[in-house]
Length: 323
Image (tube, rainbow, N blue to C red; front, side, top):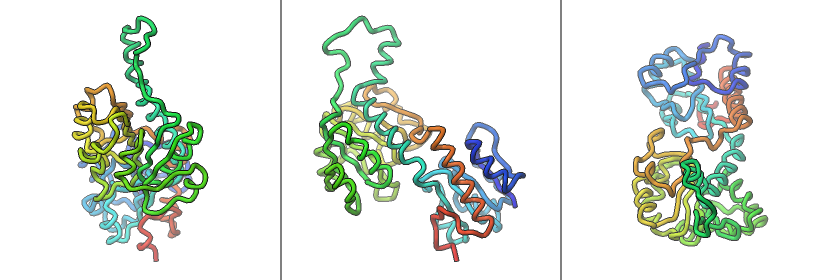
């Protein structure tokens, strides 16, 4: 069996993989493989352990060969994989749900506070030697406690973000396809439509999956529905936000601020966003804790090992291939 790991992952996952397949292959360079490199490296692979930065489409599956049995993605999302093509070929696709929920929710709150209280902006000011003493108007930000939090998409992570609002006595609104009784009973959250949520929230946090109807969910029109004092936070998927429209909204005072951990054309960031002080930017690190990334790596390895052993992987996405 040829097992190929497309990038270095935490050692806990490699240790797990090594016990089953000690001769596994890995891209040991600290960079994402180019398209040409990826197509060459996957040749003859029975299993791939991939990351969101790897675009696994029909071309890659063809390059690997008909023996390819499983693509184990070390991520909750799997929009980097052509699921339809994999299913047609009988290739199992797995993900790593659940293990990064709390870490991502924590980072969402870190971003929310950072943009509300202008933390990166004020730190840059201080480091540049501009701080000459306290002033009553210096870096005025927005209160968080007692304000309204809007959760767009109340899945695992959205719910975790909402539940963490309890310590700040916030009113919580959320959108989702189905009611979330836990949110409604424990924090008196209210399920509303997107327009109402955008119009009433002081902080809007995005947690919906990336689908055709959620791409550019936050465009010029939807941003214009928000309060001009409100802030947008995105730890979901980059293309949920039209970055050009967001830059214009931030420049023109349509909204007060934004905080992004994911980007529309990652790793590129819209150049206009890079120029603005009222946006906080982090390099897709919401799940970047030692504990979470190690658990993700172990889960991806376990999925891969089960699939090659002829067992149903614990986190099989395209269950229709399992017969």
